[in-house]
Structure formats: structure tokens, C-alpha cells
Amino acid sequence: MMAGDAGAPAAADAGAVTIGPSGPLSFAVFGDTRPPNLNDTAGYPSAIVAGDFALMAQKGARFAVGTGDYMFANADQAVQAQVALFQTAEGSFPAPIYLAMGNHECTGATASNCPSFAETFNVRGFMSRLLPPAVALPYYRVDVDTPHGKAKFVFIAANAWSSAQAEWLTAQMADPTTYTFVVRHEAPSVKQTPGVAPSEAIVNTRPFTLELLGHSHRYQRLDADHVISGNGGAPMDGLSGGTHYGFLLISQLDDGNLSVTEIDEASGNALDAWRVTPDGFDAP
Image (cartoon, rainbow, N blue to C red; front, side, top):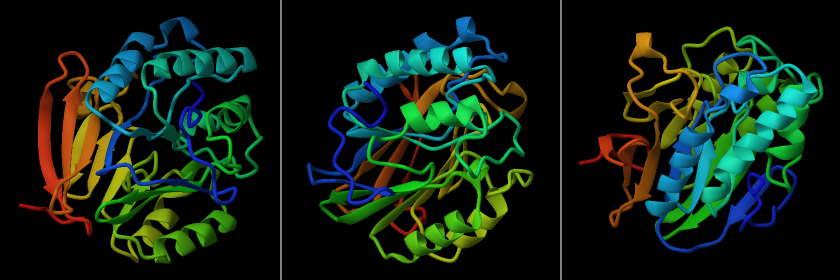
């Protein structure tokens, strides 16, 4: 399926998607599925990505969230081929997939910016083939109704930053919801990306549940409400603690708190787990 296609709900407008109620919140988070080298389509980590998606389905995720970097290319043919491989790998996950933009969906450089959404083959491929059909911008919102209140997912495009996106993000964060998940490719420490510092400043004006990040090719719990999920298949970032490929599984508990579990792609085992409140604090 194309990202966001199968079972994807209709959007209320060009920048919002709503998922109706169907039980407690349960979703998976992954990121950085690119091959090791530029235009290295033959090296695309299809088996790892497909393994992750199959496990997500087995563990009951209702949808999946990507934190960026689904390609490593600068030629149109390579972009199209790598997007096709990603879409083939996701075929084992029969549920919507919502993707954040990474630097490799712009020029590949961490400091790159594509605010016109058409500057490179990469951003054109991302916009035309990897966004939900009803979404017209690389930054958008997904709302999910849960038994304990509405959850909003705010997808920031830090490599397509503009004043328009800043205004949009300010409005989204100001809209009160029980849960707020912020999805952005780069962590707050990656200062060279144009949209990181300004978006982080806006995000921090309001309570949020979790900030879901990528870019570094590893899993790392930074604190109770910031986590890097960038171990989706790209070369492991061994110097920074990358040890395994996998994804996060986030599930709503009976008391309204959330269980966050890191799943190992090779074994299916849980390697780390904690609980977080709707406002982003450690939960008992």
C-alpha cells in the first residue's frame, strides 16, 4: 500500500487527518530506513523494514508513525526505486502509516531546507508518494479518538521550515488535547537543521506527551518524553549506542497512561520499557 492509504480516514482539510474510535490507542514508531550509500538502491534494507512492519502488525499496532529518512538518493530514478522498495516492505502492515519528513527527503544534508516542497527529486517523491492522499503539505496533523480523550500527532517538517509552518505549529500546540505527540526527524540538539530550534521553542510552550525523533541511527530514550527511534534499517550508529534494529510500540493503559516499549526486530523481544503520563511525566 502507499503510506496512509489502506484504511486511512478522510481528512478534515489539507493539513489534518482524523481516525475514529476503535479501542485503546496503540501505534508503532520507526525511522531511518535508508540504504548505506547515495543512490544505493541495491543496498536498501528491505528485509529489516519488512520485518519491522510484520512485527508491528503482530503486536496490534493500529497505525505506524515514521520519523524520517526513507531514501538516500539524489537522482530521480533512485528516488522512485527506493520509495517503491519502502512501499513494498510496508505491505506486511495492513494499517495506515504516517510519515514525517527527514533531511534525506530534502537534499540529504542535515542543514538542508525545502520550503517550496519541489526543490529536489527527493522532496517531490516524498510529497507525491509517501504522504497520506488528503495531506498537501509536509507538515500536518493526525487526530485519534481514544477512550481517554483525543490524541493529536503533530508532524513537523524541520527541513522545510518557513514562517507559515511556524504559525501552523503554534496553532496546533495551542489546541488542547488529552495527548500530544510531536513527530520531528531531528532531535533538539541538531541545531544546524533550520526548523529544529524554532519548532522546539514552540513545542515547549505547551504540555506534550512524547516527542518522537529520528536522524541518529539508534534507539535512545533521552528522557521520559523525548525518544529517538532511528533504527529502522539504516547503518547502525554504533558510536552513539546503536545496538539493534527495531521500533517503538506505544499503548494506552486502562488508567490513561501510556506504555512505551522498544521492540527488537530480530527477536521480537522487548528491550526497554517505561510508562508516561498524558502530560509527558514518568508514570508509575
